[in-house]
Image (cartoon, rainbow, N blue to C red; front, side):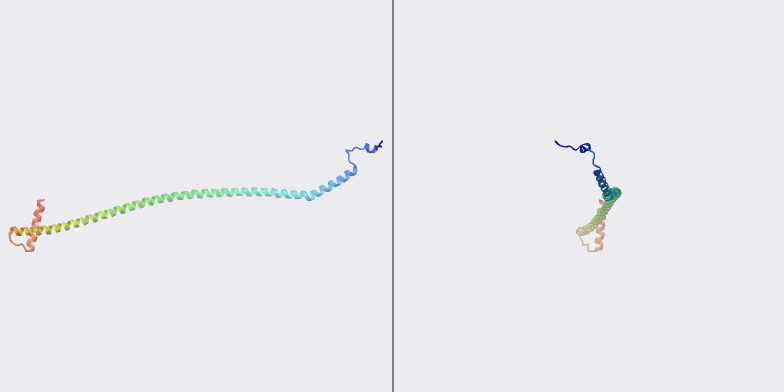
Length: 175
């Protein structure tokens, strides 16, 4: 038979011994103090750094967004100025093209007028030369014919001139 210790049976196994409670309290206090003095400041420091990094990142993001908006506005303004400038350059080029065409047309007209006038002058000069040549030939033929009709020689130059002029005047009147 076993002998059972009545004192052991009377203590509750769920309640710890007093010595364990004291050792546990001292160990908890030491652990709490070490954590509070060493670990908690590191956590707070990391938390503060992380908070500042997030806030700084947000501020930098806001600044970058504002700069991007300013750059976009500036780009849009420059683009609109470039479009206006290109439009004005196109209009100017179009006007210059019209002016050049008109100038070339005027020069061509002047050149055509000059060529026509030169051709008329040349034709008139050739006509006068032809008339003079014909007059001389007709005069020579008329003198030869007159000398054959009259039967005497008409060697006198003045007489020949008068006869030719009279013959041509009669000829022109008959037209």
